[in-house]
Length: 193
Length: 193
DNA sequence: AAAATTCTTGAGTGATTGCTCAAGAAAGAC
DNA sequence: GTCTTTCTTGAGCAATCACTCAAGAATTTT
Image (cartoon, rainbow over all chains, first blue to last red; front, side, top):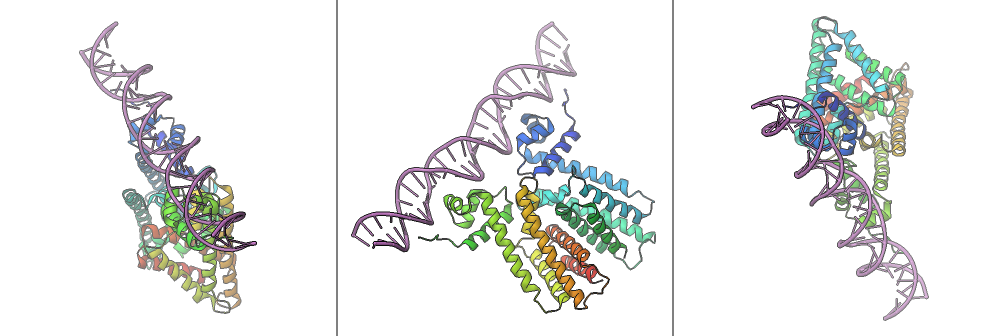
């Protein structure tokens, strides 16, 4: 057995960056060969086709995000400061130019939903898992007495997800830090009351 | 002078529907000829090129939206009930299957921003105008005593826009009416306090 | 070192893209 | 009814698309 010469994770992150920048449809194979350094034949061999590369990149993105989530919400630490930090990180990410302002899952969902039911299902599931993770953090905040008992974690998590979607979209027309930070703070307050 | 045989507004609305359904990039000229009933030559003659058709469709969409906005917020009527109605209409639109869940301006912005600075500028301006319209309604609510004097209309309008962006995005994975209505109500409350 | 196996390479494939333009059809001018 | 003008038509254009595959390079096995 001779093993492949490229680093899979690095290839996937490069492809993801290309997809994020131009969108899936407008990202040509030529763009992808340039971005990843792989030749068309290698991409075909490793991922089947362009869509396969997208699916693999989505999977990689999910893993990276899950790791980041776990690092931001350490177990046994108070939740609300972590949540505040989570939103502040989001503001920083939306503010920075080199990074993307849109969540890759949402962007892919927006572009592909009507044309690829299978991918849509997977993306929806991922987003639902994310919301469930936020909900369990909110539940933990209740258990720790950081939130009053009358709050419903499911409803709060839902509202938080909606707010984050909105914040990311808003950042596309108004990437100024103060504006985004003020919106994030307002969102945080409406969770904590 | 012989006049064109097609109805411009109807053509633009058909094109808009096609763009909304498949996205600008994936909507081929063939799709557009089918959707509008026009032949490629006629489209070229009337709108210059595919992008010209998009720009014209955006313009039409803006006009339709402005009309709808004015009808929802009648002058000299109390503002808050109108705002409630505005959000309820939004929920209904997001809930219905045949209509689009995404705002066309935002969808176009998401897809084209990195590749068409001129269009991006126009879309941003339109969205800013929309936010300004909401802000002046909120100002009117303050003047009418519907909102306490300590509220800042600009900040409230910003938050409302963010919430609406988020609601529309959220609807793409959860189009259930109860969920969307509950989110809209929560958003409404955080405006009125 | 030779043979066998696996990965890499990139010019080339048919299909599709946005778009053109000369020819034809329809309307108004006289 | 004829001429002029304007609009409509759709086959065809060059460019680009995602993708293929036979030949070459690199590694392991014998």
